[in-house]
Amino acid sequence: MRITSRRAAIVYALILAFIAGVGFFVASLMLNGAEWASNKANRHIYSGGTIVNAGTIYDRNGVSLAKSSDNERVFAENSTMRKSVLHVVGDTAGRISTGTHYLYRDVLSGYSRIEGIYNLKQTGVGTDIKLNIDSEANKIAYNALGEFDGAVAVYNYKTGQLLCSVSKPAYDIENIPDDLLTNEKYDGVFLDKVISGIYTPGSIMKIVTAACAIENIPDIYTRTFECDGEYETADGKVICNGVHGKVDFQKAMNESCNCAFAEISIELGAAKLKATAQSMGFDSQLYAKEIRLTKSRFSPSSESESELGWAGIGQSTTYVNPAHFLAIMGAIANGGEGYAPDRINALGTIGKIVGRVPESVVSIKPETAAKLQVLLRSNVADKYGDWKFKGLEMCGKTGTAQIDGEKSHSWFAGYSQRADLPLAVICVAEHGGYGSGVASTVANKVMQYFSENL
Image (cartoon, rainbow, N blue to C red; front, side, top):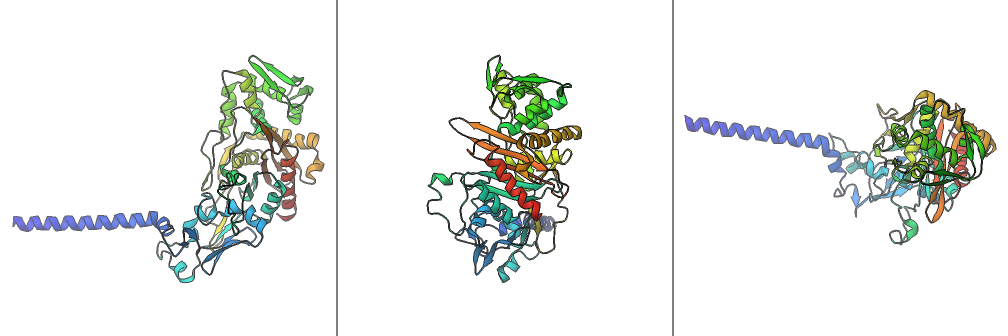
């Protein structure tokens, strides 16, 4: 009897172990099946380590940017367009790890928990993806950058839809250069600088410093500042980009006066400046939906006045990610809420993804946002000139980011106040010089396109 009971116990234990094993396998399949199916070892999808069979990637207007035909991947017809959308679409080998090909490889494979990749095996076609990106806008932005590397992005600050995203350098995915991995002109070519880049921002950072001043210096609008070309601190000088004489707060922003903003930064102190920057997302891990952004960093010195002054005007140890700063501009334009730039419009043929709603990544006090709007509109109307952004009702800030031993980076961050054009734009042209030159020209060209084609 004891032997029978012992044998029964063993049998029950084996049955329970079997059930547990099946349960573990089913759970693993549910959690990891898509990743397993889209592994490079799957020859239904990959050949020689590159994707050959997958769904089509479309832009927002239905233009095919990548599709499968006869067991190979076919890209957009125009060479410049292929370069301009390279980092958004991604390559087929997965070197561009933030590209759609890599990030959404499970979706493109057409994987289903019920059928696996049965449809892909039968038809050679997976699940399609429609992007929010306008490929024509990308091409315009890419051409506008000309000889300069850098990043350009435009998004709808009411919906979070990322309409344009360009990173340079790039290459033609249909005609990969033989020296892609050895020629220094392709340095960083696999990095999407919009979402993974990080730069010294220069004077666009004065927007953050201005927000801190608005919230912490009660009489900031009645103050005046003297600018004779340099601001003397206890331990060094902050050099200005001009001699502006006596300026008030708004004029200091219009003229991008380093002396005034260095003085403001030192009065505010490192702690308050850092608190404001962190409230806007600096030093935090932010995401553009499924895509992780490189952290913007702000660590103003609490020991050196000159370094604190330089940090407050966007130099020293201040670094910005373009997509993050785009969301900051969106927050100002949107009355305080800055949404994450979203690349994806729809998956498959059903239409928009259920529940894909804007996600806030930057918050600014509404009253602060309203005052920043006035300052940024004044920059364009009273300094840069509305003629430079004809018909756009632009608000914005230029930036000239000084780089030791090299030509400065050119920045522009702004947005349109037109109700029918709720778009924000960011541009950095590496070694492009003054922000009022290359970057603002690029921003205007792509915004003019959307003015006629949104």
